[in-house]
Length: 132
Image 1 (cartoon, helix red, strand yellow):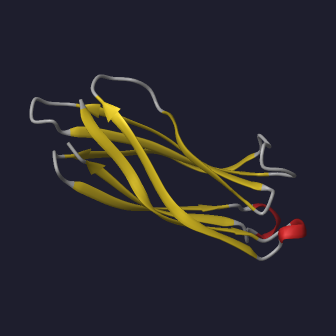
Image 2 (cartoon, one colour):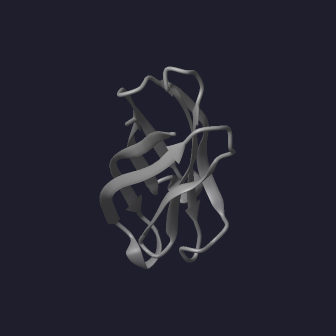
């Protein structure tokens, strides 16, 4: 078993409705134990402005006897009339990173809602860590 961590800061902007111009900031810290193969599941989610939900669906799998992890991730931005809506506005799919034991890889994900002028967005500064 390996300790798989996805972490980093995020910024979300909700620029429509009653929360227009609202920024939400925070830190992602999603930890799982990885061994064999299993599909992506939700590791993290957050909300902003009463209308936006951002989710990170991921997996981590040990791929060799040295403890290398294969991370996979999908980032999703839902925008609707409430935080539980199913209106998927934008997504980044199939991020894949192989990370050696004790190492990290950093990647920036930018999700931009193209509807209504495209002023809603989320930026995720993701660090994928094979913590051992």
